[in-house]
Image (cartoon, rainbow, N blue to C red; front, side):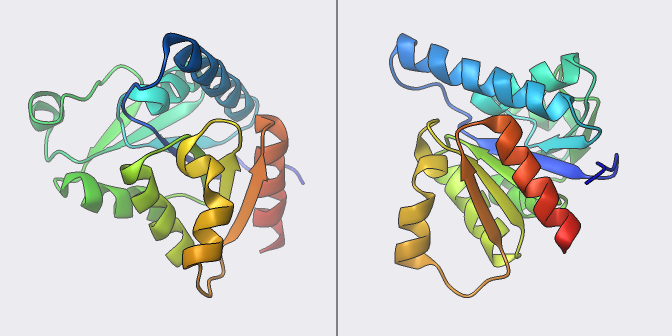
Amino acid sequence: MAESPNIKIGVMGSAADSGTPEARAVLIQKGENLAAAIANRECVLLTGATTGIVYVVGKAAHDAGTFHIGVSPGASEREHIDAYKLPLDACDAIVYTGFGLKGRNVVLVRSCDIVLFIAGAMGSLNEFTIAHDEGKIIGCLTGSGGVADEVDYLLEKFGKRSHAQVFKNSDPDQLIEECIESLGER
């Protein structure tokens, strides 16, 4: 399928740094690989304009020429920086929702055609359930930990009827390609 510059790919994942330095280094490499796979396509990247591995992916994709829109929980740049302690330098544009973290998640997920997960903790779990309930195309970068690696368990234990399509792959290029193909079939 020919890719459209109108495809909006969201990246969700761990905003906090955790684990050993070695584990963080591996996750950063996975994030940079995901960013390269996104940058190789004509798409728009959306993130929560946050820290951690999402920042790594967003900044690397931005630096490689991808247009990156951040969706902030804050109502203004000042609140984004002062109250939420979030960066500005990885995004081309930031939408200030003023909805807090969980409200921001709804706006972020609903704005995406494809929602990708790399690692992820509670906030990412919230984003995953929103994406699933909204019937989104969901891609999980396996081998990155957290929500991305627990998707089978989550769907088995808590899944309900949904039009969501969930793809899992440890290769970012293949993962994105599967998601884009699925989008083209909708």
